[in-house]
Length: 225
Picture 1 (tube, rainbow, N blue to C red):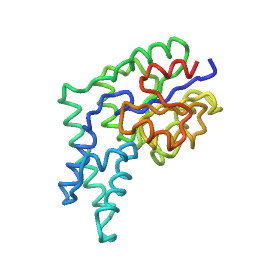
Picture 2: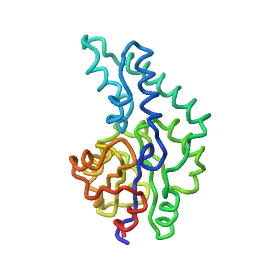
Picture 3: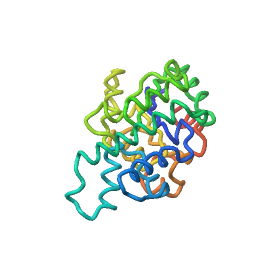
């Protein structure tokens, strides 16, 4: 098999997300007086969360000078606290259908499994722990562990270095959002696979030029083979 590493997104791609992330993000924004809706924030949830907060503030705050690093940090702290509570306590933390079987088959065929995410490490690790995935994946890289999160390629590049992969044509990226696809393009992955299980529809994903769009995660197997 020419593919040595498959990098999967988390919420909406491998982990069930019924707008939990968007709801926590919205609540954090509202705590600081910014009224927004889940449907408004869902399309940007793939970004590193402080970046997503700045993007929303730039739409909602007329006073540009009010958009300070301190404000962004406070909103992000509120978001992280909300997500940690949810992922510690909720019984809805489940893998999407077919994900664990797909991981298992790929690893049996010698392919490394990576997870990357717009979450910070504390949230991402809690999800992996709750799902008991530490032995089912090979590497987890969160957005606060690199210079910049998606759509920049740094999380994928960190994984490549970890496994001694020097050619991005040996890497596939799988995700449900615009930034997943653009991350794959910037990293020059051979396959950039959009999945319709998350925030974007098939037509919306197609706008960003993935190499493939799938409705079920198991379809990744036939592509990377």
